[in-house]
Image (cartoon, rainbow, N blue to C red; front, top):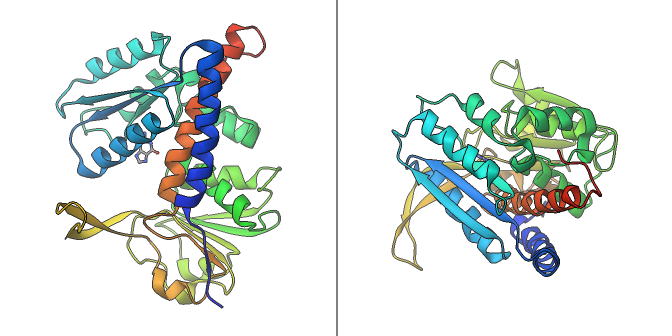
Length: 309
Ligand code: GUN
Protein backbone atom coordinates (compact mmCIF):
# COMPACT_ATOMS: atom_id res chain seq x y z
CA UNK A 1 0.00 0.00 0.00
CA UNK A 2 1.34 3.49 -0.83
CA UNK A 3 1.98 6.18 1.75
CA UNK A 4 -0.76 8.49 2.95
CA UNK A 5 0.13 11.96 1.68
CA UNK A 6 -0.15 14.69 4.32
CA UNK A 7 -0.98 17.83 2.37
CA UNK A 8 -0.18 21.09 4.13
CA UNK A 9 -2.27 22.94 1.58
CA UNK A 10 -5.48 21.27 2.87
CA UNK A 11 -4.67 21.77 6.57
CA UNK A 12 -3.65 25.37 5.92
CA UNK A 13 -7.16 26.17 4.68
CA UNK A 14 -8.77 24.89 7.89
CA UNK A 15 -6.35 26.89 10.06
CA UNK A 16 -6.71 30.07 8.01
CA UNK A 17 -10.50 29.84 8.24
CA UNK A 18 -10.19 29.58 12.03
CA UNK A 19 -7.82 32.59 12.14
CA UNK A 20 -10.07 34.65 9.83
CA UNK A 21 -13.12 33.95 12.04
CA UNK A 22 -11.22 35.05 15.18
CA UNK A 23 -10.00 38.16 13.34
CA UNK A 24 -13.60 39.20 12.64
CA UNK A 25 -14.34 38.87 16.37
CA UNK A 26 -11.29 40.95 17.33
CA UNK A 27 -12.30 43.68 14.91
CA UNK A 28 -15.78 43.77 16.45
CA UNK A 29 -14.56 43.82 20.05
CA UNK A 30 -11.39 45.93 19.71
CA UNK A 31 -11.95 47.96 16.57
CA UNK A 32 -8.88 46.74 14.73
CA UNK A 33 -7.46 43.51 13.30
CA UNK A 34 -4.09 41.96 14.22
CA UNK A 35 -1.19 43.73 12.47
CA UNK A 36 1.85 42.00 10.95
CA UNK A 37 4.95 43.69 9.57
CA UNK A 38 7.45 41.73 7.49
CA UNK A 39 10.94 43.17 7.06
CA UNK A 40 13.06 41.94 4.17
CA UNK A 41 16.63 43.12 3.63
CA UNK A 42 17.94 42.68 0.08
CA UNK A 43 16.48 40.82 -2.88
CA UNK A 44 17.18 37.14 -2.32
CA UNK A 45 14.56 35.61 -4.70
CA UNK A 46 13.56 32.80 -2.32
CA UNK A 47 13.13 35.24 0.61
CA UNK A 48 11.20 37.65 -1.61
CA UNK A 49 8.78 34.92 -2.60
CA UNK A 50 8.32 33.69 1.03
CA UNK A 51 7.66 37.23 2.28
CA UNK A 52 5.14 37.95 -0.50
CA UNK A 53 3.27 34.76 0.40
CA UNK A 54 3.22 35.73 4.09
CA UNK A 55 1.85 39.18 3.26
CA UNK A 56 -0.77 37.80 0.83
CA UNK A 57 -1.92 35.33 3.48
CA UNK A 58 -2.08 38.03 6.17
CA UNK A 59 -4.27 40.08 3.81
CA UNK A 60 -6.48 37.05 3.14
CA UNK A 61 -7.25 36.44 6.83
CA UNK A 62 -8.08 40.12 7.33
CA UNK A 63 -4.94 41.33 9.13
CA UNK A 64 -3.37 44.74 8.72
CA UNK A 65 -0.21 43.92 6.79
CA UNK A 66 2.88 46.05 6.22
CA UNK A 67 5.78 45.04 3.99
CA UNK A 68 9.14 46.74 4.54
CA UNK A 69 11.64 45.95 1.78
CA UNK A 70 15.03 47.46 2.59
CA UNK A 71 18.06 47.63 0.27
CA UNK A 72 20.81 45.03 0.81
CA UNK A 73 23.27 47.73 1.96
CA UNK A 74 21.02 49.25 4.65
CA UNK A 75 22.96 49.67 7.91
CA UNK A 76 22.25 47.52 10.92
CA UNK A 77 21.47 50.60 13.01
CA UNK A 78 18.78 51.67 10.50
CA UNK A 79 17.24 48.21 10.70
CA UNK A 80 17.34 48.30 14.53
CA UNK A 81 15.66 51.73 14.50
CA UNK A 82 12.89 50.41 12.24
CA UNK A 83 12.31 47.44 14.56
CA UNK A 84 12.21 49.81 17.56
CA UNK A 85 9.52 51.89 15.84
CA UNK A 86 7.35 48.80 15.24
CA UNK A 87 7.91 47.67 18.84
CA UNK A 88 6.13 50.93 19.83
CA UNK A 89 3.42 50.77 17.15
CA UNK A 90 0.10 49.89 18.82
CA UNK A 91 -1.43 48.66 15.54
CA UNK A 92 1.32 46.08 14.99
CA UNK A 93 1.22 42.78 16.93
CA UNK A 94 3.79 40.75 14.99
CA UNK A 95 7.24 41.66 13.65
CA UNK A 96 8.99 39.26 11.29
CA UNK A 97 12.51 39.86 10.00
CA UNK A 98 13.10 37.45 7.13
CA UNK A 99 16.32 35.42 7.49
CA UNK A 100 19.03 35.11 6.35
CA UNK A 101 20.26 38.70 6.71
CA UNK A 102 23.18 40.08 4.66
CA UNK A 103 26.67 39.29 6.00
CA UNK A 104 27.30 42.77 7.45
CA UNK A 105 24.52 42.32 10.00
CA UNK A 106 24.57 40.46 13.30
CA UNK A 107 21.48 38.23 13.10
CA UNK A 108 21.46 37.63 16.85
CA UNK A 109 21.53 41.38 17.67
CA UNK A 110 18.64 41.96 15.24
CA UNK A 111 16.50 39.18 16.73
CA UNK A 112 17.23 40.46 20.27
CA UNK A 113 15.85 43.87 19.21
CA UNK A 114 12.33 42.51 18.57
CA UNK A 115 9.92 42.83 21.52
CA UNK A 116 9.42 39.17 22.61
CA UNK A 117 5.65 39.86 22.78
CA UNK A 118 5.73 40.67 19.03
CA UNK A 119 8.18 37.91 18.06
CA UNK A 120 5.75 35.80 16.04
CA UNK A 121 8.63 33.70 14.61
CA UNK A 122 9.53 32.70 18.22
CA UNK A 123 13.23 33.28 17.46
CA UNK A 124 13.95 35.68 20.39
CA UNK A 125 15.91 34.01 23.24
CA UNK A 126 12.97 34.60 25.60
CA UNK A 127 10.67 32.59 23.33
CA UNK A 128 13.32 29.94 22.62
CA UNK A 129 13.76 29.57 26.39
CA UNK A 130 10.03 29.36 26.99
CA UNK A 131 9.77 26.57 24.39
CA UNK A 132 12.52 24.67 26.26
CA UNK A 133 10.85 25.16 29.64
CA UNK A 134 7.15 25.12 28.80
CA UNK A 135 6.86 23.11 25.56
CA UNK A 136 3.57 23.70 23.77
CA UNK A 137 2.30 25.88 26.68
CA UNK A 138 4.76 28.60 25.59
CA UNK A 139 2.96 31.67 24.15
CA UNK A 140 4.55 31.37 20.70
CA UNK A 141 5.80 28.18 19.08
CA UNK A 142 8.21 28.52 16.15
CA UNK A 143 6.15 28.27 12.96
CA UNK A 144 7.71 25.33 11.10
CA UNK A 145 7.96 23.05 14.16
CA UNK A 146 4.40 23.98 15.22
CA UNK A 147 3.20 23.26 11.67
CA UNK A 148 4.89 19.84 11.70
CA UNK A 149 3.32 18.95 15.05
CA UNK A 150 -0.11 20.02 13.77
CA UNK A 151 0.35 17.81 10.67
CA UNK A 152 1.22 14.82 12.87
CA UNK A 153 -1.87 15.41 15.03
CA UNK A 154 -4.31 15.92 12.18
CA UNK A 155 -2.95 12.91 10.20
CA UNK A 156 -3.29 10.70 13.31
CA UNK A 157 0.42 9.79 13.48
CA UNK A 158 1.24 8.33 16.93
CA UNK A 159 3.95 10.49 18.52
CA UNK A 160 4.03 9.44 22.20
CA UNK A 161 6.79 6.88 22.68
CA UNK A 162 7.82 7.04 19.00
CA UNK A 163 11.44 7.09 17.82
CA UNK A 164 11.84 10.46 16.13
CA UNK A 165 14.95 11.20 14.10
CA UNK A 166 15.53 14.82 13.04
CA UNK A 167 18.11 15.41 10.31
CA UNK A 168 19.42 18.98 10.69
CA UNK A 169 20.19 21.13 13.75
CA UNK A 170 19.19 24.61 12.60
CA UNK A 171 17.76 27.15 15.04
CA UNK A 172 14.66 27.49 12.82
CA UNK A 173 13.71 23.81 12.46
CA UNK A 174 16.01 21.07 13.83
CA UNK A 175 16.61 22.27 17.40
CA UNK A 176 13.07 23.54 18.10
CA UNK A 177 11.21 20.53 16.61
CA UNK A 178 13.42 18.21 18.68
CA UNK A 179 12.53 20.21 21.80
CA UNK A 180 8.84 20.33 21.04
CA UNK A 181 8.50 16.57 20.46
CA UNK A 182 10.50 15.50 23.49
CA UNK A 183 8.37 17.50 25.95
CA UNK A 184 5.76 15.69 28.02
CA UNK A 185 2.39 16.53 26.49
CA UNK A 186 -0.02 16.14 23.62
CA UNK A 187 1.53 14.98 20.31
CA UNK A 188 4.94 14.80 21.99
CA UNK A 189 6.68 12.57 24.60
CA UNK A 190 8.84 11.02 21.85
CA UNK A 191 12.41 9.70 21.99
CA UNK A 192 14.29 12.17 19.83
CA UNK A 193 17.65 11.88 18.04
CA UNK A 194 19.11 14.90 16.23
CA UNK A 195 21.46 13.96 13.38
CA UNK A 196 23.61 16.48 11.51
CA UNK A 197 26.58 16.85 9.18
CA UNK A 198 28.88 15.38 11.85
CA UNK A 199 26.74 12.23 12.33
CA UNK A 200 28.36 8.90 11.47
CA UNK A 201 26.25 6.52 9.37
CA UNK A 202 23.24 8.79 8.91
CA UNK A 203 21.33 6.04 7.06
CA UNK A 204 21.33 3.71 10.07
CA UNK A 205 19.86 6.45 12.30
CA UNK A 206 17.15 7.23 9.74
CA UNK A 207 16.21 3.56 9.43
CA UNK A 208 15.33 3.46 13.15
CA UNK A 209 12.85 6.30 12.88
CA UNK A 210 9.09 5.90 13.32
CA UNK A 211 8.95 9.60 12.44
CA UNK A 212 11.74 10.95 10.22
CA UNK A 213 11.96 14.75 9.97
CA UNK A 214 14.43 15.96 7.36
CA UNK A 215 15.59 19.58 7.30
CA UNK A 216 19.05 19.26 5.76
CA UNK A 217 18.75 21.42 2.62
CA UNK A 218 20.17 18.65 0.40
CA UNK A 219 17.91 17.56 -2.50
CA UNK A 220 17.05 13.82 -2.54
CA UNK A 221 19.34 13.12 0.44
CA UNK A 222 17.04 10.46 1.93
CA UNK A 223 16.80 7.28 -0.15
CA UNK A 224 13.95 4.77 0.16
CA UNK A 225 16.24 2.22 1.82
CA UNK A 226 16.86 4.75 4.64
CA UNK A 227 13.17 4.65 5.58
CA UNK A 228 11.62 2.13 7.98
CA UNK A 229 8.56 0.59 6.28
CA UNK A 230 5.40 2.37 7.47
CA UNK A 231 7.31 5.34 8.98
CA UNK A 232 6.07 8.92 8.79
CA UNK A 233 8.41 11.07 6.67
CA UNK A 234 8.25 14.85 7.09
CA UNK A 235 10.26 16.62 4.39
CA UNK A 236 11.14 20.20 5.35
CA UNK A 237 13.61 20.74 2.48
CA UNK A 238 12.82 23.35 -0.15
CA UNK A 239 15.60 23.14 -2.72
CA UNK A 240 15.57 25.16 -5.94
CA UNK A 241 16.88 22.70 -8.52
CA UNK A 242 16.06 24.65 -11.71
CA UNK A 243 13.57 26.94 -13.46
CA UNK A 244 10.55 26.30 -15.67
CA UNK A 245 8.00 28.45 -17.48
CA UNK A 246 4.61 28.49 -15.75
CA UNK A 247 1.72 27.47 -18.06
CA UNK A 248 -0.59 29.83 -16.13
CA UNK A 249 1.47 33.02 -16.13
CA UNK A 250 4.12 32.43 -18.83
CA UNK A 251 6.72 33.52 -16.24
CA UNK A 252 9.79 31.64 -15.06
CA UNK A 253 9.23 29.81 -11.75
CA UNK A 254 11.56 27.76 -9.56
CA UNK A 255 11.47 23.96 -9.69
CA UNK A 256 11.41 22.81 -6.06
CA UNK A 257 12.54 19.48 -4.59
CA UNK A 258 12.60 18.26 -1.02
CA UNK A 259 15.35 16.48 0.91
CA UNK A 260 13.65 13.11 0.35
CA UNK A 261 13.55 11.03 -2.84
CA UNK A 262 9.76 11.44 -2.82
CA UNK A 263 8.65 9.13 -5.66
CA UNK A 264 10.69 6.23 -4.33
CA UNK A 265 9.75 6.93 -0.68
CA UNK A 266 6.02 6.74 -1.51
CA UNK A 267 6.26 2.94 -1.74
CA UNK A 268 7.94 2.54 1.69
CA UNK A 269 6.62 5.23 4.03
CA UNK A 270 3.29 5.06 5.88
CA UNK A 271 2.82 8.84 5.66
CA UNK A 272 4.76 11.44 3.71
CA UNK A 273 4.65 15.20 3.08
CA UNK A 274 5.11 16.49 -0.50
CA UNK A 275 7.35 19.38 -1.64
CA UNK A 276 5.91 21.82 -2.51
CA UNK A 277 2.54 21.68 -0.72
CA UNK A 278 3.66 19.99 2.51
CA UNK A 279 5.33 21.74 5.44
CA UNK A 280 5.71 25.15 3.69
CA UNK A 281 2.01 26.14 3.72
CA UNK A 282 1.76 25.05 7.37
CA UNK A 283 4.61 27.38 8.36
CA UNK A 284 2.68 30.33 6.98
CA UNK A 285 -0.58 29.21 8.61
CA UNK A 286 1.20 29.01 11.98
CA UNK A 287 2.63 32.50 11.50
CA UNK A 288 -0.94 33.78 11.13
CA UNK A 289 -1.98 31.87 14.24
CA UNK A 290 0.92 33.38 16.23
CA UNK A 291 0.07 36.91 15.05
CA UNK A 292 -3.55 36.43 16.08
CA UNK A 293 -2.39 35.11 19.46
CA UNK A 294 -0.02 38.07 19.90
CA UNK A 295 -2.96 40.45 19.64
CA UNK A 296 -5.17 38.28 21.86
CA UNK A 297 -2.45 38.22 24.55
CA UNK A 298 -1.91 41.95 24.24
CA UNK A 299 -5.56 42.92 24.60
CA UNK A 300 -5.95 40.47 27.49
CA UNK A 301 -2.91 42.03 29.22
CA UNK A 302 -4.31 45.54 28.65
CA UNK A 303 -7.61 44.41 30.15
CA UNK A 304 -5.71 42.98 33.12
CA UNK A 305 -6.88 39.41 32.41
CA UNK A 306 -3.47 38.00 31.43
CA UNK A 307 0.21 38.75 31.85
CA UNK A 308 2.08 40.49 29.09
CA UNK A 309 5.07 38.45 27.85
N1 GUN B 1 13.92 32.09 6.78
C1 GUN B 1 13.58 30.80 6.54
N2 GUN B 1 12.52 30.42 7.27
C2 GUN B 1 12.17 31.50 8.00
C3 GUN B 1 11.13 31.72 8.96
O1 GUN B 1 10.33 30.86 9.30
N3 GUN B 1 11.10 33.00 9.46
C4 GUN B 1 12.00 33.96 9.13
N4 GUN B 1 11.87 35.14 9.72
N5 GUN B 1 12.97 33.77 8.26
C5 GUN B 1 13.05 32.55 7.70
